[in-house]
Image 1 (cartoon, helix red, strand yellow):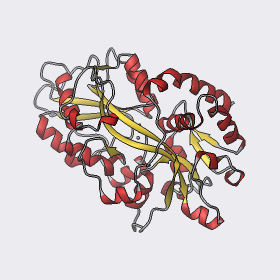
Image 2 (spheres, helix red, strand yellow):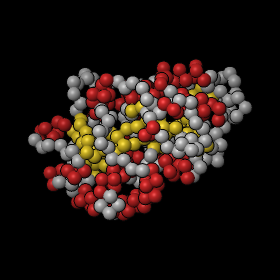
Image 3 (cartoon, one colour):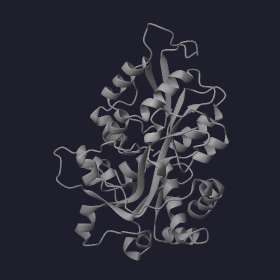
Image 4 (tube, helix red, strand yellow):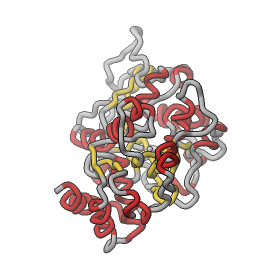
Length: 361
């Protein structure tokens, strides 16, 4: 979802807000705890909300919102940990279930139970004894395919992990680096969930032999290497398969002019891994009260219903509405791969190390 740069190029083209107004001239904007009127959110670079929602938060809370974007989710989390004693802001958004244990084990967040947390769907709640993070959104990391390419070649698109290693799909797939990219790591965890501790490495050997291409992050993979995206078409990309999100096809529809009746890309639903993103009040936040107000707002109905068409993720709040086109073109996977956070915490670093040695060397 961090969940990580999903539709930024398209979003910027549409003018979605990625940085809200900074502090007003009246009042204390120093960031000190003694009455600061600015609350600062630190995020990966997929943050995007509408102007109306920013205005609603500022009117409701009395705080001005400032957003600092800091690269891909993995990069942003690592930097936040390194600066936790003197944090850049008050709230961090974008740590997902693949990286959550790293943030919690390093003391990145302080406890706060956001108002409205009781309306968050139970399956997305974690750390309920300490309430160090608030679930914000969810999405599925999946292989996307270029419909036109496969129709032209009269080749059936892949549906499962097993399909991707078949000779028919040789040299067609581009993935993100699991060591530097959140969707790349999510896809690795999906293969580990599918093939188990003893089988995922053998699967990646087959993928490598079948010509998988690895790039640093989502933006390069999706907008430069994938032939099915608007950016990929302009770049004359030649890979018709990419690790992206189940919500990428509706982005291709909604931002197209003219808007097509069907999405130009599809999802191999048998390759999906469920991602959940969280926000938390940073330890040593200079404006903790502003941070708490922001977390309350992010768990609320207004923010939750704005997310689908701003960040192309699903809300986690019960009863939050999702736009019809989002449901039509980007439905959630019916049976996504998942993994217990404790298992991710126990194995993630070693799996990434083994994956790097196996695939990149």
